[in-house]
Amino acid sequence: MTDPTNISDSKQPEEAHSTNILEEAPAGVLEEGSLDPVYEAKARVLNKAIQDIGMGRYQWQLFIVIGFGWASDNLWPIVTSLIFTPITNEFHPTRPPVLTLAQNIGLLVGAVFWGFGCDVFGRRWAFNLTIGVTAVFGLIAAGSPNFAAIGVFAALWSVGVGGNLPVDSAIFLEFLPGSHQYLLTILSVDWALAQVLATLIAWPLLGNLTCQEDVVCTKSKNMGWRYFMICMGGIAMIMFFLRFVCFTIFESPKYFMGKGKDAEAVRTVHEVARRNGTTSTLTVEDLEAFNVGGTQGTEASAALQRRLEKLNFTHVKALFATKRLAFSTTLITFVWAFIGLGFPLYNAFLPYIQATRGAKFGDGSTYITYRNSLIIATLGVPGCLLGGFLVELPRFGRKGALSLSTVLTGVFLFASTTAVTSDALLGWNCAYNFVANIMYAVLYAYTPEIFPTKDRGTGNGITASANRIFGIMAPIIAMFANLQTAAPVYVSGALFIAAGLLVIILPFEPRGKASL
Picture (cartoon, rainbow, N blue to C red):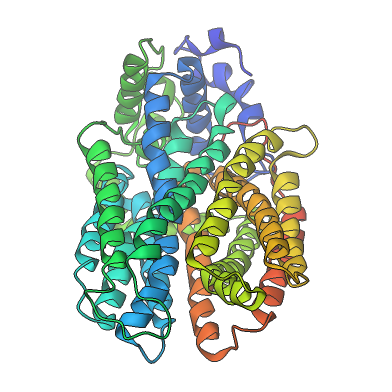
């Protein structure tokens, strides 16, 4: 890392920062023309200031509340898959997968709106509102009188869910010291725990208080899924309360800096230092010294230009500014897209597959189904923790961990088709979920790391949107495919393996480098 004594002398900012902070940028991002040189220099100064403050009280509190977003991202798609069967039994829709389709459309809208919007309007309000939107419509959905209503509410709560990762990963990464960026991978333990929580709550409610197959199903006999929705919406509301009322989120200093608000960026850094019980030597002069002509661009014409920026594709173009950056953005988008189709195509119908296969093997009871789901979910927790270890291994790093875990996810999905007993199927599903959680843990950390801060929300929005667009295809395929065959598993496995191979040729490896 850099010498902390070099940054304190604000009279020689170019000499102080240009020699040492170069090593903090992600590999490849320093190629000429890939970033605005003024922005790049200021980003390194802010990286140094955050590193000097260290990992303290504010970042650990942020680690907790950011985890709510990770949990919600996995929790609510699981909610949809768990209530799928009791809703189908009660409302008898012509095309039941429309529920999953409505959810994925909402996720797409959320990824686009919150992902792109947080680069324009800031991270703070998006951070607070995403879970609030989810909680409100999740609770309202419990009173749905018909299939159309629950479909609409699923789309609306998913608008909130779709913004969690694009916004939350940007916020957390921008406050993390470079030495602690591995925590972005560890955060995915909340993603895995959400699956465990949903399964534990669903077991008594959906297992005992919903209609079984081939019986006349009325609302009074099928209240379990409504109670389940109240529980899930209530949990989301508690998360929203803790975020909005009990925790004060600061706007990202790099966001301020990218908007030309150097004084606000410095003030935020000093607020974080104060919250951590320490101080920072960063001054406005440290940043302003890099401004062309010594101005900050705050005159009326510059302000108008920034407002016009909101109406164009500046942030999108920046992600394709050079061949290498364009190649990276395109590849990671395809990786997200392939996973976006493979994961819901298989996992959204996992309870159905388990129940039908279990029935074929003679043990498709409610107890066995939910017991197996809980075992599978639990295996995801150590997977996330292992991912946090793998990303820091020399000569392996983010790319090695992501490529290997993604390919293995596809391999285990293929292997699951060989199961001739429910125990064998359970074993393969456990292996799949273990490596899939490694994959997601690394993917969610690697993606924001390779985008510059000023365009990070947009980059996250692009990849998340590709993921959601391909996710929309899954229920459409399900409506016209025979889900009682192994075809969805073969397709899913092939997509995961293809995504893993694409990771190998990604040009950037952020291990050991502070994100810009």
